[in-house]
Amino acid sequence: MAKITASVYTSHVPAIGAAWDLKKHEEPYWKKVFDGYEFSKQWHKDNKPDVVFLVYNDHANNFSLELIPTFALGTAANFETCDEGWGPRPVPDIEGAPDLAAHIAHSVITQDFDLTLCNKMKLDHGLTVPMSLMFGDVEQWPVKVIPLHVNVVQYPIPSGRRCYELGKAIRRAVESYDEDLNVHIWGTGGMSHQLQGPRAGLINPEWDNQFLDDLINTPAELAEKNYVEYLREAGSEGVELVMWLIARGAMDEDKAPKVTHRFYHVPASNTAVGHLILENQ
Ligand code: DHB
Ligand code: FE
Image (tube, rainbow, N blue to C red; front, side):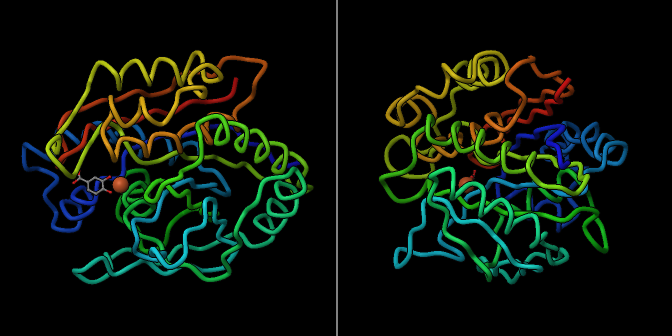
């Protein structure tokens, strides 16, 4: 049986990817960010999953306003990365897990969630920045990845409750797969940030840290939060945080998770960086 053993949460700020690629790790501004991920890189070496189910959002790089899937599952064997204006990042392609992805598609859709299936999809900073932060510089990524894109760009976006319930459906799907696979699920994006309008630059550390506490301890209650509160308190792009509820919903329900790592830092570019590793006990 396949099993989800851990969930990982992190911001995906594109400037982190640029700082990484330009080797700015020792610059004081970026060192404070990268130091928060040193533990995580070692932890991933010691706890390497077979597959990462990676919940992220595309930023109008693969999709556009011509086509807006709420939930889009990557079922391909290989994914290229996007050119976001400066050429694709110098990172390897991402290897998919098409057999498990097809099983998850079948299971989750028959549990009444409408997934769009993507047999071809390019992946942007929403996915590649978390990969660099967790696995460092590599010739080839050490894991297979099943990407799940969530629309948090064009309203209406899915509710926290729907994301949390989708996570539970993904857990049931993984646990009904015959092969013995160690699966991790990641929730990415956030934390508080707003890139546009008069409130551009908004950061809300108190709200973010309460979100981290609630995600760990009371996720079902957190899932009831309306998107308007995310917008008001965490900013227009802070609403990316609803994606973390998918990963949290996929964790065991009967036992509280172990908090293996917690990191929070302001700022990276315009964003409050948050990062958690939770393990099923
Ligand atoms: C920034 C953060 C994001 O999540 C994003 O998608 C783009 C830019 C930023 O902080 O600059
Ligand atoms: Fe983003």
